[in-house]
Length: 274
Image 1 (tube, rainbow, N blue to C red):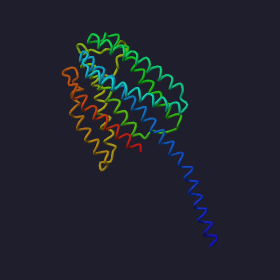
Image 2: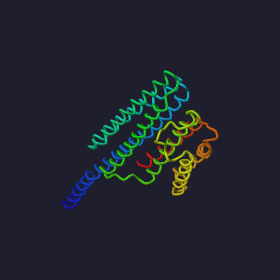
Image 3: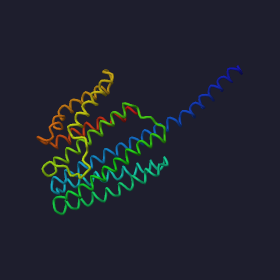
Image 4: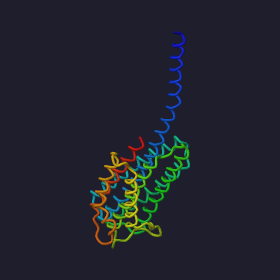
C-alpha cells in the first residue's frame, strides 16, 4: 500500500516537473511566433500604404482616397509601435532605433508628398521618390529585425509558413508596383536610381511558380490544399493583368483580388504556425 502511494506521489511530482520544463518552452515558442507575425504584418502594411498613396496621387487629390491613406498610415504607425515594444522586450535596441529613425524619415517624406497632392493635385517626382526610398528602408529594417528575432530566440519558422509569407510579400510588392505604374504619368516609375530589378511580370512568374510548388508538396486531402486551389483560381483570373501590365491596367481588380489572396495566404501561414 505504502509502495503504491509512493509510486503515485512520484508520478505526480514527475508530471509537475515535466510541465514546468515544457511550459516555458511552449510559451517562448508561441511568443516568438507572434513577434515574427507582427513584423511580417508590418511589412505588408508598408506596401499597402504605398499602394494607397499611389491611388491618391492618381486621383489628383480625391479626399476619399486621402482618407484611405490616412487610415493606412494610422494602422502602420500603431503596428510599428507594437513591433518596437516587442524588440525592446528582446533587448534588440539597435533594431528598434533603426526602425524608429526610418519611420520618422518616411513619415516626414510621406507628409510632404501628401501635402503637395492636396495643394496642387500632384507631387513632384523628387518628392515621391524620397517617400518611396524611405519606404524601402523601412522594409529593410523590418527584414533585419525579422532575422534578428529568429537568431536571438532560436525559433525556427516552419518551412511552409515562411514559403506562404514569402508569397504574400511577392503579391504586395507586385500590387504596389502595378498601382504605382497605373497612377503615374505615362506609366513611368516615380523612382530615381532605386528601380526594383524585379519587373512586375517577373514577380508574377515567380508567384505562380512558388504557389504551385507549395501546392504540390501539400497533401491533397488536407484543408490547406483546398484553400490553395481556391487561391490558384483567383490568381488565374489576375495573372494576365500582371503579365501584360504594359498593355492595359485594371488597378481595381488588382486591389480587390490581390488583397484577398494576400489575406488568405497570411491566414493560412498563421494557422500553420499554431
